[in-house]
Image (tube, rainbow, N blue to C red):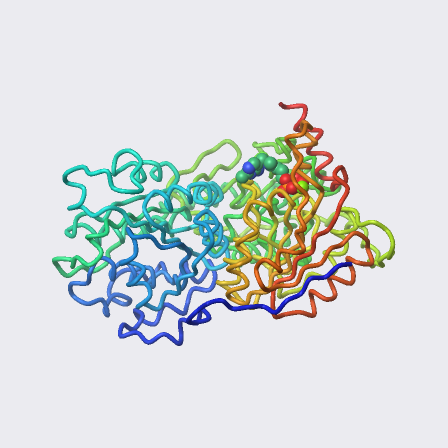
Length: 601
Ligand SMILES: Cc1ncc(C[n+]2csc(CCOP(=O)(O)OP(=O)(O)O)c2C)c(N)n1
Ligand SMILES: [Mg+2]
């Protein structure tokens, strides 16, 4: 085992990311800025983010920039990621004078992943970037946040309204001045250009509310000459609250109750929306009250603790454990709550779930058997389920997977993917979050046992490589006390590894495990060729370049054990393991997936 160590260096010239030490003349509205440390808390803040309670402290005619910051604070946003540029510098100045901490990143797309990771842990995240060169760089990460429902606020500067009048060729301009916004309209749930002081406050309210309500990214463009413009009138945030249609809710719950009462083999299949909408506790309450077993999808992994006695394992069609597949598919009442029916989550559509036997509730759809219901909030439906007055059969749980024998390193044996995951499974504890990138690390990670809710993050639907390292940064900005275990392939690592620079700068301590199988192994399984080869870097020597962090080169089980022991004992800085794997050695789940995919291309 070769180890590279150097002292963690904080290169931050001024502060170490502690907003509490900041002196600011503006108190945070109603003290809300320190609340909201989970999606559930943000839901609660959102419920109170309108009307007088939080806005009493907003001055009569705030500038547009100040109003935006106040509203971000109302929603509990304590940190924002990005890179400044001249079109957004003034707003960066405003942020600097506010309680919001700015986390500078190495690239805008990374800032987007970081904000996404932060939002998944915290309930809302944000990025602040300059016009087009910054904004357009962040499109892919924002698209991923849209696809996987992560509430990220994109704030971008742009040329001033006055500057645009003679249609000049200003730097960063692509085509029309509106081009960037037009692009973002496709990948956000609401967007606005704050080019009119009369409507700016209302627009900010509308767009932020949409972000929290739909859990999807939104776009706010600030022309640079509008940032200091004052709202011409006193504005009190208003928001219409959406309510479920009571009669429809009653009927849907009645139908769900009847189906559950008749069922002999009920099961809950939990999806990621339960976490996004802060409904994990309600879900567990429902399951516990009626003792209904729970499975989860890969994207929804860790919606509930996998140590929960009712949890039976991850369901992924033909990709999951046979006993789980059978148990779910043989059910005569599958309660799918917040589940996305994606190809990966459905085991590349190998899932055999009978629609006539499902109760399917998400924020967008409520379907019971073949009946569609409208105007019902998923939260009301899930809460209503646990209030049902029905008797539900107690279904015996499937046989547990055989407990894996304790990992005993065979020192000189080369590490394999299966043994690596067995070892990682043993080190997980309550203070860790697994952040998995795309590739075999994602499939292998499905079998890890996650102890607490929100402990597993991955782009398991949009599957954009490069997510994990910046997302782990976002996790620790939100919760420094959680230690990320980052699982990343060598290909994905090469895309975004330099965000470890920001990790180092803030003294965060993820353990980054690079599955170095010398290329794009997932793709080799579909179709191999030289295009799947990549340069074999000395990944473990990245700390030399950055000036901090610990690096380990791992070839054998003995080296794996030693380096993980060292990494666990070092709480001070990030640790990076370059784990050499055979290019064709993959997890059993990937083997099954590769075979299935090759039949479909
Ligand atoms: C941004 C992006 N580009 C390309 C792909 C297509 N793709 C899917 S998996 C994969 C290979 C991943 O390689 P690596 O990170 O080394 O993981 P491995 O498959 O080797 O486990 C590629 C290129 C993708 N998912 N995302
Ligand atoms: Mg690889």
